[in-house]
Length: 121
Length: 121
Image (cartoon, rainbow over all chains, first blue to last red; front, side, top):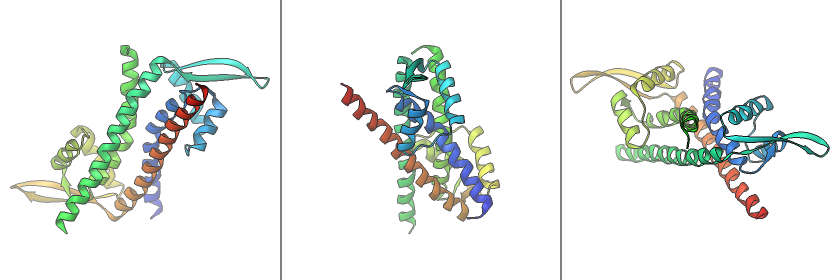
């Protein structure tokens, strides 16, 4: 694969991940986390997010009413804990329905083509 | 769900679909299509794309070297037919690997939480 095509792929990969990231963050915040444990748990599940992406995203989702946050002491340091608001839980549920529908469409496209290719052969 | 939250959901939904759309278009163009049949086939699989989104996307993907196109007469009218280039096929393959990995991560997040919630109960 040429360098130019590799750069195109990298852009498409980021575009693909961007929307999914929010889904993962909302799903993980069904339980309470502060930034560090949220990043670590997502990384354990194969989702790497830079702090410079995660923290603005958390603030944006809180401003939009999907997250609640609270400062609390944890291991002698103040941490900002985040969790889903009721509106966030409802939004997550709708996004998961959407996600399953996209998944099913993509699988249909993939197997539909396989059938057509087989017919032509 | 309030109107404000509904608007937030709609934005997140579009963000989620945007990246996936390109995956679906590339996968569908493993066989040749012109714009109308491409839109129709994707719609049959549950993926609705406006012409005003699809046509610029096709031109962008062709400029990036992922698609090949050719004008040909079809039913007495000239149509521009599109299909994956070899670089496009390689990119699609990589994106599908990425897609499966994102899917697996999201399922892990979803079931990981279920386990933790069960533990707390």
